[in-house]
Image 1: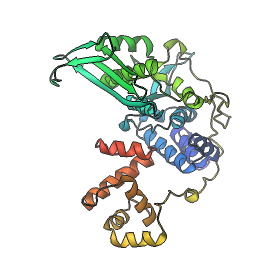
Image 2: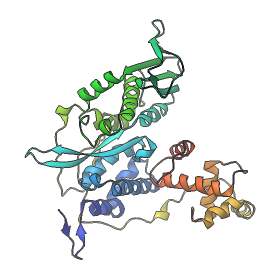
Image 3: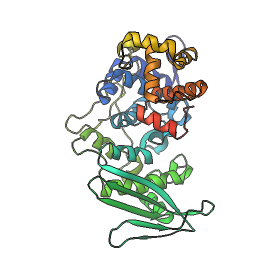
Image 4: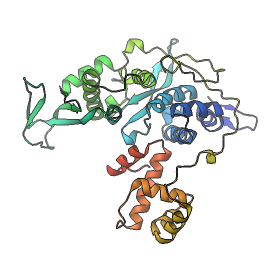
Length: 375
C-alpha cells in the first residue's frame, strides 16, 4: 500500500528510504560514526544501500528503518553489502507476524569472504583457505597435528563430497575443519532460520552457504574473528541473522515516530529504532570532505596531467571529476604504464564503481583482481 504526499506523488517504502538516506542529516551522522567520523564514506555507503534496494524488489517492500538497522551492522564491520563482492548482503524474508500475516523483513548476513576479511583484520593470520573435496579424492585428519590431509588431484567433473577450511596463525597455531555435504545440510537445518526459505541462499545457492558455514565455524571455534576490545564489531557479528535459532526470531517492533538508530555505548550494539520519514533536512555538501589527493605538489600534478595520457583519458571518459582525483585513483590501482589506455579506463571505472558501493580500496582492488566489476 502506498500513500500520496502533498504534491500527489506516491510515497513508498523505497521513497522513504531514499529520503532518509539522502536528506536526513541524523542518518548521515550515525553512519559516519560507524566509519570513524568519515562522512564521505558514509555517503558512499548509503548510496550503495539505495542501489542494492533498488535492484531487489523484496527489499523494496521492507520498512526503511529495518533496512537501515541491518545496514548499520554492515557499516560497523566495514563490509559492503553488494552480494557480488561476496563479503556481506541484506536479504528479505517473509516472516510470520503474531497476527498470522506475512511481512518482508531484511536480514544482514556475513558471507564467506566477509568472515575471512574480518579474521585477517586482526592481523594474526598467515593463511586462511576454504575449499572443496571431490569424490575422486581421499582425505584424513592427521591424528598428531589435527590438520586435514587431502590425497589426489581434484577432478571438477566429479561431485563435491566435502568442504573444508584451514588456517594458520602467526603464532604457529593451525586448524582444519572438514564437513560432508550431509553434515552441512544437517547443520543448516538445525541452526539456520532461513534454511527452508526459498529466498535464502541455502536454497538458492547451497555451495555458497557450505563454504561460509565451514569457514565461520572453524574461525569462530578455533581462531579469532574480531579483536577482543572491539565491542561494536562483536555485537554486529552476534547479530548475523543467518545463524539465529528459529525460536529467537521474534518480529522486531519499532516506534514509527522515533528518529534515531541508537547504539548502546557499553556494548556498541544497535538498539532497535526508527528513522523519521516525514521530516528531512538538506544534505551537507559532498565537497565537505574531498578524496585524499596523491602526495605531490600542485605543480607536479599539472605536469603529470600534461605528460600522462591516462589522466586525460579518465577525465574525458568522465570516470573522475578532476585531475587531482584522477591522479589519486591511478595511484591506488597502481597499473603498469604499459597497460593500454582502454584497459586503464575500464579498471579505474570499476574501482570507482566499487568505491561508490561502499567498498574499501582493498576490497575494490581484490574484486577487480578476481575479474569482478560492478554492474
